[in-house]
Amino acid sequence: MARAIASIIAAMNSPDAIALTRDLLRFDTVNPPGRERDCARHAGALLESWGFTVAYHEYEEGRTSVIARAGGSDAQPPLCFTGHLDVVPLGTRAWSRDPFSGETDGDRLYGRGTSDMKAGVAAMLVAARAFGRSLAGKPGLVLVLTAAEEGGCIGSAQLARLPGLLGRAGAMVVGEPTSNYPLVGHKGSIKLHAHFRGVSAHGSMPQLGDNAIYKAARAIASLESFAFGAEPHAVMGAPTLNVGTVEGGSGVNLVPDAARIGVDIRTVPGMDHAALLERLASLVGEGASLDVFSNLEPVWTAPDAEWVQRVFEICQPVLGAAPEARTAPYMTDAANLLKVYAGAPTVVLGPGEAGMAHQTDEYCSLERIRQSVAIYEAIIRDWCRA
Image 1: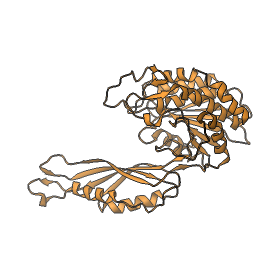
Image 2 (image 1 turned 30 degrees about the vertical axis):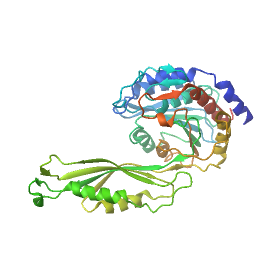
Image 3 (image 1 turned 30 degrees about the horizontal axis):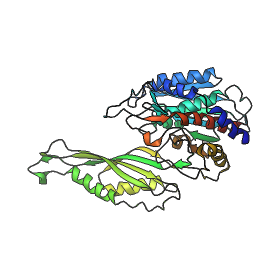
Image 4 (image 1 turned 60 degrees about the vertical axis):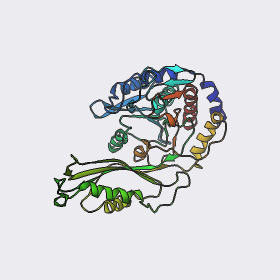
């Protein structure tokens, strides 16, 4: 472990991950529509040149994910690094910097996806480069770079459904933005639309119709005071529910015959998603229907797990203090990948700034990018005894 920690200082001066982050930024992978293929092929070609075996998977045209492997042994499964290649739209506010060229100002590297999460992807690629040809007979590495994470982790869900594609992993590092602070999980997520049906009529004779918006409004009022009946998690806190969208009606002088609301629920370990959805179906009322388009369990690794403690020890010199048990406020692909890598201890750990995710003039710290390469290299060395 002392050797792993010492390697952090030696690796922190490498500019390669910053240059690679700029390269990745130049690929427009804004989702929608995504178009991750060129970016995925670029990353895959680099990994192949560094000694990795690379496979690509497209769940639809142009939406490409990468699975790369090096080394491997029967005694211990490989270490997985994962990150996504897509980024969110630029938003309506004007950017003061070019969002795709990687401009710098002081310690800041600007661009859409710098924090969320192309800097993290670049750092894990550069860290992996140092080991690609030296892992024969050792536990090895698997890198999973996904398409279509933004908006529901659709790409990783598809990967997890395909038998044998992902192989094995004994532990996982998710390079989402954490300012290089190792987090031990995140809440689960249920996203759904509730559809309400009514009967159309003239607005001057509402008694002849059945107003679907009124049904939606009654459901919204009930959801506002919804009691989960679940104890708050010691680290994640309490589950939450938010009604984020309301749609309905086609004219002010018509009784609306359809309405729809969008609901975002965040769950904590120990909650039964199926039972929760049954309660919600009953609450929204007879005749309403639920369209669940994302249903992902929480991710949680006990902070006293042996591997997590080793990761904490590796990160301590960079952070200046011993890490404490914390979790991310957002969802990650780990929730899907753990359907295959069941039981693998998982940390969310990347150079980006969580507060910069999805923001205008998004940026990432150059120093944290350098630090993350060193941290990732130390974690790989520790796992693979390389």
